[in-house]
Length: 80
Image (cartoon, rainbow, N blue to C red; front, side, top):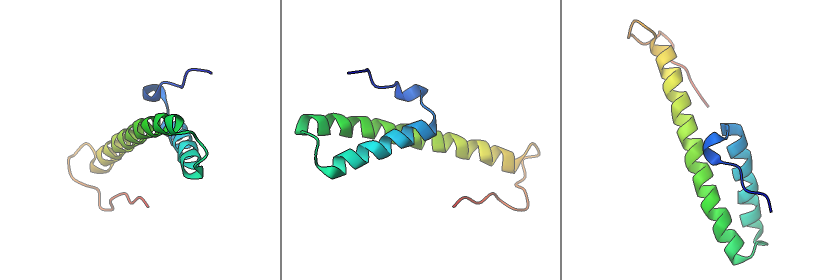
């Protein structure tokens, strides 16, 4: 069995895709207990990585919106 990819080196999209696959496997109930525990642990690490990447992106966007002058722009960025 190949070694799982290093989570810290993953892009947000790659980590999210793997997390979605893990959730699907866990929801199916087909994995043995030990595999389910291992998958859950990896899923938790992937979730934390995705949250970190989103926070970093949010801070970058906030810096762009606030700009060099320190005053917020007239129209804040919206996500959703």
